[in-house]
Length: 101
Length: 243
Image (cartoon, each protein chain N blue to C red):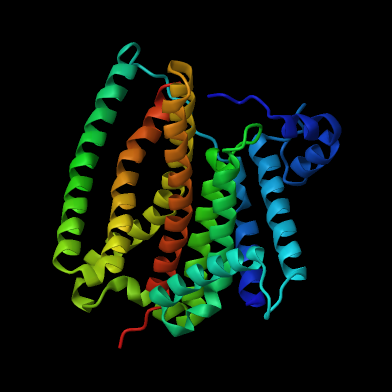
């Protein structure tokens, strides 16, 4: 275990050039439409995420109703699925953070 | 983007600026007026808290009469260990240290932002990226150490050798997307949770912002669990042997 930890530490130190990464500044030509576009994009992402999560929850609820003994497993899969779908909407949010303010 | 210093960072910058600048100079960065950033000082505080917590726990360990403190930590250990065994089988205990560390560090980092006067270090992009890069390096390293470099690289080609030219770019892209998604998920959840609470605090009185803060606490705990779980699934995928 110590060997693994030491090796991981060395690999991480070798990644230190990432400290110097910078985002290039391109001239933005959007102007006044950037916040509106950001809001519409986020709304679409959140709406579709809501649809996907609704399907996931409905599948999980039905599975628990049919087979209450498997509730723990189904709950685990449900939480995992919800978080993965949520992260897709959050990718859009991060682009908004970068572009707007 | 707000970059105001919290009291801890101001303390570090007022008294320990020299140490900060020498660390920056070590990696070739120029000296700055106020070198310490919020997330660095908060990370150090989180590490200090975790080390002190576990040191106090270790001195009080007892098999016959476990106190409440020990029972809490035993339940955390059982939780992480049972997840490791679920994902990685009975030999998963070898990798338990990494997952446990990840879970405890991200959990404490997420929750320390609730306390007024402190900030979650995971709220800044650098900290989740650090955890995600460490996870990426760890699961690849474990895969190579377990199966050998050639066999590990060969599993990128997929189950059927004929499909290899199609599978290899897909697998490479999906592997590269993993640290991106890990870091982005944690960062965006923490940042958005704090922003939502702040926005609602500016809008209305006590109850609604408190509800959003409760959601933020729940999301913080859940994101720590999910980060650990995904790290386990990646290690399980890297270590898996074809029967």
